[in-house]
Length: 255
Image (tube, rainbow, N blue to C red; front, side, top):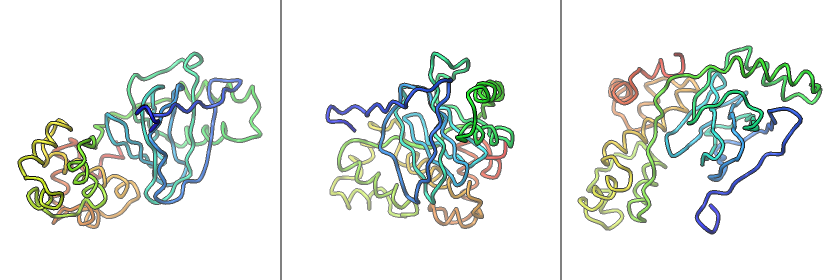
């Protein structure tokens, strides 16, 4: 965050065609600070699982998914276990396709190979133009409900939020967490509702489900995921996921 409280604007260099590619290996646990780009961006990982957080949601991206991030959208990107990230930046004035909000995209085998082709140093300008035209034709939005909850700003409420984000399996009650930060349970409950727009219980559910998505994308069994994010049984986790998202965990990345 910049000194004036605004997210820094990071401008990617322009290129001869609509798209500019950057690629790099992110170590486990790495997060880029909150920022935005004037260009549109497609965030994608050729290996591993990326997570992108925006004001509107929490997006988890295995190699079969990418995220369109409109220019000017504040976001932060990271990975739980490491990833080979490709940042694809698109000049708005040269881009024939756009989405007004963050949009998950399907990455099938053909799109995967096109992204790698466009990243290669040996790809000529003419080849780039032809490949980019195919990419624009093949962009395929995936209809999903983003999962996640905004962080409260009041210091003591934020401390509770940080505790639960760091360990979603923490089983302490609202009263116990309030005592840990020296405020009353009623004040804590009011703080979550006023600052996030949802109740403490709803916020906690969203955080647990968001924490489960990278584990789900990596193929971890549901029984182990449920325990790691605070559910006593796999059925309780599946029920909460289906209630909030509208599909089962098994279908979230396969639709």
